[in-house]
Image (cartoon, rainbow, N blue to C red; front, top):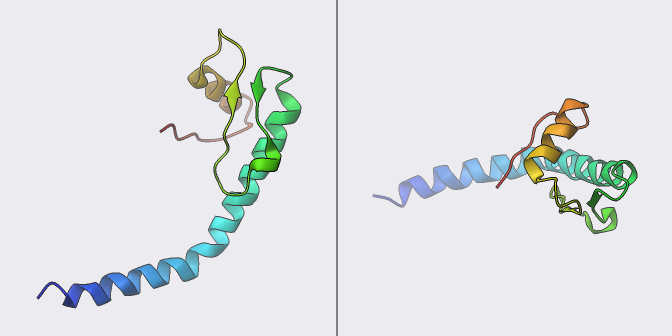
Amino acid sequence: GGMRQVGVLAAACLYGLAHAEMNLRIDNENAKKLAIGIEKATHGVVHVDSKLVETNIVHLRILKDDLDFKKFANRLMSVKFITQMRIF
């Protein structure tokens, strides 16, 4: 009986793949813009290599000992550089 639901799940996956491509492309472009902006604006506080950003994930390294990621993210949000942040 469980295999009947596989078709329903597969259809949902196909729909998602077909309709999410544009959003993913926009996310990837926004991540690249974020990385470039951080490179230009942080003046030795954070290191990010925008040339390595190919997806919607931006890896960065905080260079100041007295600055943690939460403070950094809050600062970006306070100046409207970003509007939301997910920390994993």
